[in-house]
Image (cartoon, helix red, strand yellow):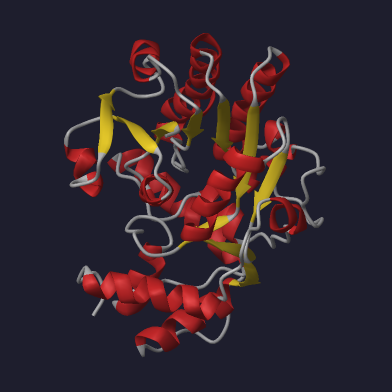
Length: 326
């Protein structure tokens, strides 16, 4: 029986990955930060290790003995300036810690969950050979994930067997903090406006399958883009409205208006010290048009693309079961 350690196991993607690993008869270890964070894993047959990726000793402890694959999923997706220093510690220093701990422990393979954000806000169709513009981005998340990938590449040059996966926007059941917030705002009729950009939406369940496929048959040193159906955010909002039976806007907000609104909220947050719903960084992402070539992951990892209407239906159904939407 193969042994896997998962960082970020209590999060959205990590939780799906843990369940799928158990279904595949892996012996699963999880790294967790607090007792309350373990709630999503209640009842699962996993071995728990308290700590986090910024704590080297906790990583070494979790990797004691034979570990066949280490799935590094933990990350900070913050877009608010006061959280950027911690984001760098988690996404860059934490990834360096994971890489070095994996080398010390002789881990069979590292599967690093990065992000499409490493490629920056380019207008080109993104593929695995696209330049990592995120290294020089003013958006801290993009820069931190790009620098985190560099730590993995340093590990590879030192002899680490590692594969990198770059998901696009992750959608699906089990989400309460990310795109689920959009669904809840539409349900409550509190959506302030629709951004003018577009994105690619990957099913969280298919992303979890792809991570395991990367561990089992991905090529060492290679990267794989994990995407899904592409559409505009206006179309996404209107589809969600139809699923909920709620009215939605029929046009997007101009990009300049969203940027101005985010700047105002950012200024207010500096006084109140409360995180705003929109920041200049988050607005930059949703005003951008993302286009990805995911043919490599479809060919090598057998990545499946869930039709967006089916993905939205599954997500809304789960949110209704949790009484998070009406």
